[in-house]
Amino acid sequence: MRKISWFALAAPALLMACARPIHDQSTLHEVRIEAQTLIKNAATKAQITVPKSKWPQTIASLNPKSITVLADGVDILIIPSFDGGSGYFIPLKEREIPEPKGRFATVSQGVYWYHPY
Image (tube, rainbow, N blue to C red):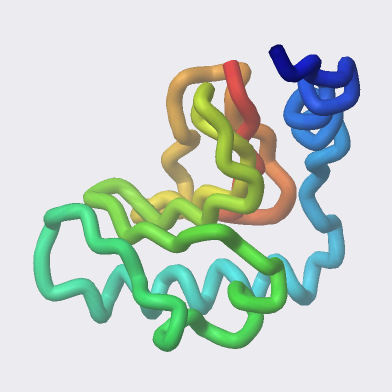
């Protein structure tokens, strides 16, 4: 039987603990504008995964794992995980605070950082 090291078991938790949003306001402003463009270009209210070849420049610079346009905004997944992962969320309506409370933190006007429950 092969033994699994403690590090292999702890690595995902350590990675999630290190996940932090950027705080550069000019970059976050550009992310919000690019997300709004993705929303406008979505032809339907259905969930759309944006192909990597169509990722906007500033959002792509965040090195996301995926970008999804949802009915209520844009999800930029940075660190995937079984419990929802961490990333940025830009709501369709800038003044709407994403739910559930406690999972989303404001990092810039209209840009939120989410983390696992």
